[in-house]
Image 1 (cartoon, rainbow, N blue to C red):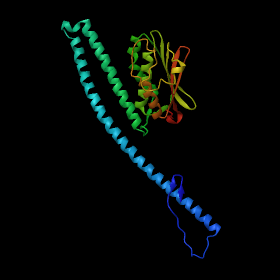
Image 2 (image 1 turned 180 degrees about the horizontal axis):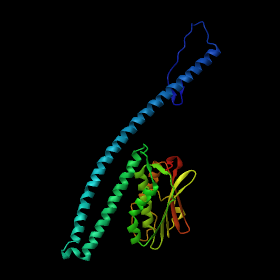
Image 3 (image 1 turned 90 degrees about the vertical axis):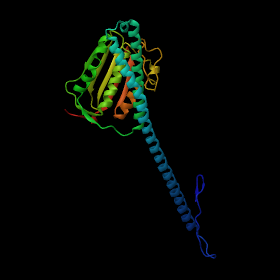
Image 4 (image 1 turned 135 degrees about the vertical axis):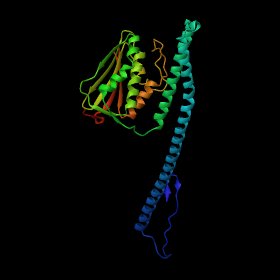
Length: 295
């Protein structure tokens, strides 16, 4: 028996010394030998694949253990920093005059901003690792978008007003209930709205629209005043990638937000589209209609 990488073994046939093997017998034995070689090769491949599966399972367990450990180690100092920030904020509001100096307030502002950015980076990195490790589908639940969307928008109202932006919401009166993973969908919408707030100038408009088609429920987040160059559009979902010279208000960021959005969209079984031209950028999440039910 001969395989592609050499001889697998020998198949011996015996007859009396005066007997001769006929051509048909030789062909039959050759066919049997070929089939035996295939069976042996497939058995070895199966054994190797099973070993690989065991190794991957072991690696996944190690990744899970690593995530649990690193999650604790990274979040513990952040909890202490947040407590320190709260203490400093109370001092700033106290009656002690030296705590009310502009310099003290500015230092606290820098400290608070840096700590929040650091915390966001940690959360995004952990979430990214978690999504890479966890391959199972998240548990779905019924979501009423008429309630779900306004609750998310509420947390952005003060920021949008402070940055002198305009917010337009377009939700049809009768939307079907959506079956999806609520926490992931919320994270996606929040990240897209955060991105829109960062890159929309004063006087420009941020929009959130829902529409129903024959194939899907579509959620779109748009912002005016900034266009993503066509040559950069295929790269904005890459980890840590930020468009050069496209942060005029110096908000900063981790370069992980849109990477997480894309991965989470895939996890909940949806798709993501980007359009950016004529002074407007639009991200559209398409959730298949089989994820929906009539309310």
